[in-house]
Amino acid sequence: MSFVEYSELIQEGDVAIIFLGHDSMFPLMVQSGAQTQTRYGVIRHSTDLIGRRYGSKVTCSKGGWVYVLHPTPELWTLNLPHRTQILYATDIANITMMLELKPGSVVCESGTGSGSLSHAMLRTIAPTGHLYTVEFHQQRAEKATEEFREHKVDHLVTVLNQDVCKDGFGVTGVADAVFLDIPSPWEAVGHAKSAMKRQGGRLCSFSPCIEQVQRTCAALAEHGFGEICTLEVLLRLYDVRAVSLPLPDFGPDDPSRTDPGVPDRAGPSVPTNTAVTCRTAIAPREMAGHTGYLTFASKSLV
Ligand SMILES: C[S@@+](CC[C@H](N)C(=O)[O-])C[C@H]1O[C@@H](n2cnc3c(N)ncnc32)[C@H](O)[C@@H]1O
Image (cartoon, rainbow, N blue to C red; front, side, top):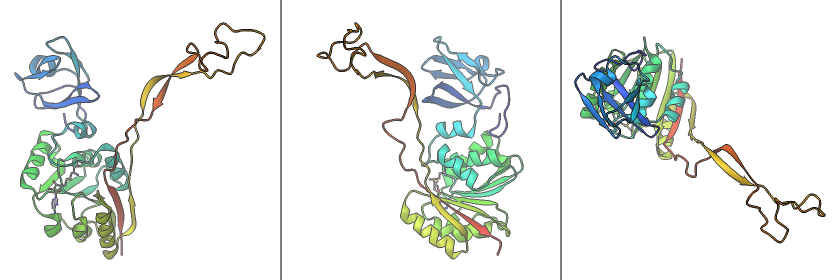
């Protein structure tokens, strides 16, 4: 197993996703001899996991079952241990596209945080690209390094424990793209520019507040970036539900005939026995709120 390559069979040392339901999953490190408790009973790694196919339905000791899924950056984002606020798939998808990431891209990122975005970027730039990620919080930098090793993507990433605003990304003239998710991105714009290839590249900065966006845009313009554009991406999910719609009562077709199915005009205006049931998509009452503004810019060859 690796987060950038699919394997058929579950092996010792893999990180598998145990799927109990759409809103109930957890990651598990597969170890021979180990046991994991779920609400459906125990999973015994040696007999229930090792050597079985990813996607298998595994029966637990109490007779209930779970699915064992191959890890992906999307599943990791939903299940990772939070050490910071993280980016979710909707923003990540747009960042990946707008930064024009592809296999072979060299990317600089700060901060690493919980590594949610880093995993998605690594999957996109593999097998020949590289991610330089900068995190000034020592424990977070160490934990991310450990996770990249466990997920077998450490050959694609360099984690630097330093302040990106003071010390930059540790590389010059190599990046196709730079991504910033820090409180004062405007202080890192100069370092972002020098980390990027001479012939140019793309930059993205994620900020929750519009005042941060204003300062970042001003710094980008000062440093000669072009195509500066800020956007917000809002996701609307729909639930599929069976709904019952009452049919309107327009009265009998022929007033001289009394239809036994339709009550007379003095009765209720919407007869209870005339309704249709259909499956439809329903917008949720509450929508996911604001995550942050995404500011994109291009460094062009001058
Ligand atoms: C919101 S988190 C990033 C989350 C990340 N994008 C993810 O998806 O998991 C911001 C991180 O930036 C780090 N940070 C803030 N300012 C920094 C700086 N000047 N240099 C390096 N890291 C910084 C913080 O320690 C924190 O871990």
